Image (cartoon, rainbow, N blue to C red; front, side):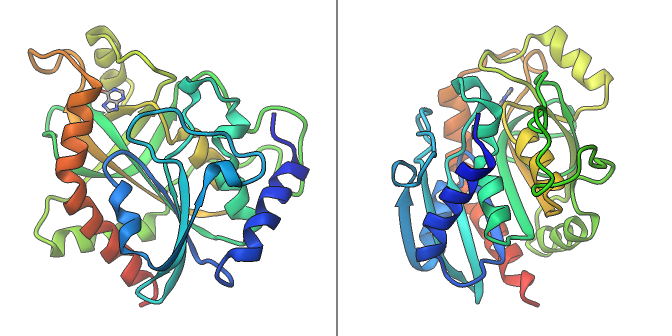
Length: 274
Ligand code: HPA
């Protein structure tokens, strides 16, 4: 369980080497690892160096923080996230968000790889998140209340910022890509879902399914941040097609879409300063 003091220690460590007042935080999911290469005058800090940071255990998640400038915007990008299925406490999963909060970041862009529950999607689609369903059975705000981080009972009626999403939709459309929106269901994993679970998810209003993001978004909303979420559909969810799911296939599609995903995210960053 990460304490308020530990969050501050991590933030204090980073504030020594950060650009003044980072404006935007990014949590980069599968396929977007190379995005950090675009950051200018970048400084890379391995998670091992940051006090109280766990070390990411998933292949394809590098585990470092990259900060610097992109199109005049001071950003910090978390390359590799902490998944609940790795065995971390949910307060460790949300530690990057809390550190960003302490560093004054008000805008957070989260990305992930997801299975397509909505049968209109195809692998390779990028989907703007309109809402989420936390089915992990845990809430990152559970426990002793810390007033300095946010309210005890925060509103969650608009976890993804509608204005920012609309702007991102315009950018995606201008790039000649399909503009899609959907609801992300976060499950604990690490097994993929059964076809019956996917039918259930569709029934309760999910368009996408994945094993990340929901806790980070709850913490960010609690922290008063504006959040934009983008999923890359790496596969159709279980039972949609005659196929078996494998992490290798998911990673391969994520890598294939990576370049296009990077272009979209870079353009979103560029337009933040407009
Ligand atoms: N299910 C859960 N998580 C995922 C999937 C999926 O089908 N694809 C990528 N992440």
